[in-house]
Every structure is written in structure tokens, then in C-alpha cells.
Image (cartoon, rainbow over all chains, first blue to last red; front, side):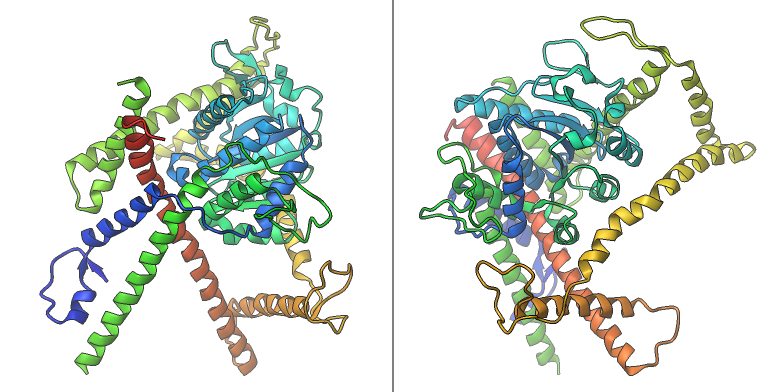
Length: 320
Length: 236
């Protein structure tokens, strides 16, 4: 449908196939931007994978401990940041302490720390407590040897933190192992969950090596088909994928699971259980903000494909 | 203008600069591309020392004295052996000595191969098990009861499992490249497998497009909502 150079198309069917690329990009920008100014709460039915993710996260006892492997950077901010924010809101409200590390990208720990600070500030503004580095979470930073590191986490988790320093704001470097997050930890099974937020192939590295701790993933949209197999086989306890996953989580945080009301989200799997949400708190974020605009952009794509094919069909018939 | 807004302003200019290539190749785009590459390289170099070499090698070799609440740590001089082994990797640039680069490569390959035996089973084992599902119903009911009775295979479930099994088998036959397939049944199965693969790739491509759109929406949100609306105009 689109071309870069101007053509001498005369018939409308030829013109339909030769719309200049800048025009299409311009329309796409418009379709992606205008809906952002008119946020609409779309109806939603969270998928099982997202429901499991939320339910399992909520089942981590208050004050529990998890490992959070953050392997995303600003290149996938659109999806991964929304996922990370939703997860952090759950962790902070349940006072779950976590070990933060990255095996995917050298910039990832800093990006994660920035997001933690933002969500912590947001929670404080709403009457929550600040999440402090070293006390509530400990940052082990980046590990270059992904395979060896993950295997070491599975077999001898404390060895991974040995020699690592955490750099909390306003204090000197501190031995990561002295953090309260590691207090009482002897093996990886002492952690309640291993959660990975990723936009790269580290999902497979971890899946191949972690056997002693339940796992859940938050992945980008393009990784959903692959990771759905791992969720279906039970290797993952829950899966949050792409902007749909974030939107699901935000809905679940607002309404909970099996809580009677006008917006009840029912789950057959958790029948007989009522998993609460946090109505009145900041639950909506990037998922809700982007989902409406995404529908517009996808509608444009469908229309563009249909127009291009119509033009091609008519032009072919004319040439016969 | 406060610091945060200034930071956002630079990010907005960088975003516009990088998107300007959609119109055509230009110097503004090139500038921001090089800024990005320079920042990433600089960050990577520093992190290589602080996150990898210092904590994983240097500090362990020299140990540490107790300070600021941190305990003392014994140094292990044997870590020095890693230096010549690591440096051997750079002999790949020398025609005369490049044989030495194979030593660290061999060590890495050996370590990786050793891990892969158990990794393979951890990865594929549950997938194999999950593929083996009952394809015959054991009740006359087609639709799943609410709540479902444990151990009952409903008609709809059996049908889903059958589709799943047929997909696995037909896709596997598509990859029978090592001999000439003459059987009509195998050919039909292979063709079905190819179609199913294409449907799968279509779904993956759809997810990819959706992800790219989300990235664009995110940048637009950053420019118009976070910077212009909330930052400049102080609107909620």
C-alpha cells in the first residue's frame, strides 16, 4: 500500500496501492496520540494466565520474599514498564521484600531502580510507605554470565550475592548479604517466588535452570505465544504478557477475583476463594492508558490492509 | 524549568530526532543515533568494571577490610589465574598466537555443554508431559461442567486435546527433511503441518505488530501526556 517515491498512478485502485509512507506514518501518529487524550475504560475479561499471575502474587504472604529478575530497558518501556509498575504496586502493598538482579542487559538494573523509586513515591503520596533500597529490596546489579548465574541461584543462592555491593541512596556501599532481604535465606526455595520481567531470551535461560522455586513471567507481547506453552505445561505459575496482560492486572488490582459486585471478575479455577483487590488506590497505569489507543492503531492497520488489497484486486481485474 | 522537566525535554527532542528518520535520512537523526550509541557504550564500559570485574574478580582477589558496617573478606590470590586465561581470548587478533584464544573458548563451551544436559530435560520434560493428553472423553457430556468434576474428560476438552495432538504430529512430519516423502498420508500431514505453522507465525507476527504499536503509543504518551500535559501545562 505504501511507497516512498511519488508515482504517476492514475486510476483510484493504483492510487490506493501507492499512498506515500509519510502520509501513513502521519495517520498512525494521529491514531496513536488522539485517543490518549480521551481515556476510555474498555470492558475487559482477564485471561486465565493473568488471573493466575495476580492470584499467585496475592498468595505470597505479606512480608514474604521473592527474587525479581528485571531484564528490560527503555527499548520496551511501552510494555515492560507497565508490567513492572503493576508488579511493584502489588509487592509494596504486601510489603514483600525482593532481591533485584539482571542477566539480560547492563542498563536494566538502573532502569528497574528508577521505576521502583517512581512507584514508591506514588505509594507514599497515597499514604503508603516508602520502599527503601537495602532495607526493602537489595540490588545485586548485572551479571554477565547468565547461565552460570542462574544455575548458581538455583543451587547455592547466597554465593551469587557474595562480594556484591548495594549502593543505597545517601549511604556508602553495603555488602548485599547484610541486607534484611537475605535474612533467614539459605536456599532459593526460601524465596516465595522467582519473577522475571523480560523482553529478551533470558526467559529460556531461567526456565532451563530454576527448579527449586516457583516462577512467573512478565513478557512483551511478541513473547506471549512462546511463553504460553510454558504456562500451559505448568512450568510457569502465572504469565502476564504485553499490554493486554498489564490491562488485565490493573483490572484485577481494582476488582480482585470472585468479589461480588457490578465489575466482578469470575474465575472457575479459584471458585470458593475470594481474592481482594485494592479499590480506591492507584491501580490503573500504562495498561489502561494505552489499551484504548492500541485498539485505534490496530483498527487502522486492518483498514490499511483491506484498502491495499482492494486496490490490488481492482487493479488486477482492470489489467485483464 | 526544573531539572526533571529539563531531563524530559532532552528525551522529547531525542525521541523526535530518532523518529525523524521515518520521513527521510537526516543529520538530526544521525546525531541522536550517535549520542545513543556513545551513551550505551560508555555505560557498558563502566558497568563492565563495577558490576562484573570489580565485584566478581578484583574484590575477591584482594579481599576487603571491615568498614562502614561491612565485614572483612579474605582475598584469594588464585583468582589471578583468570587474568592470563581471559587475556588469551584477545590473541584471536594475532595470526601467530590465535591458537591460544581457543583455550578460554573451550572452557566456556565445556561449562555450557555440561549445563545443557540437565537444562534440556528441565526445559523440555514438562513440555513433553503436557503434550500427552487424553483424546477420548470418559463422559457423555460435551461441555465442561461448572464446577468441573476432577478426572472427567469432557467432549469439548477431548476435542481440544485432539487438535493439539494433531498439530504436534503434523508439524513434526513437516520437518521430515532427511528422506523423500512419497506416502500420500505423510504428504497431506506435512502440508497440514505447514499450514498450521503459518497460522502460528501469523499469530506471532500479530503480537509483534501489537508490540511495536505499543512502543509508539508509549513515546506519544511520554511526549504529549507526561511532558506537555503534565509537565508543561501542569494538568492532571
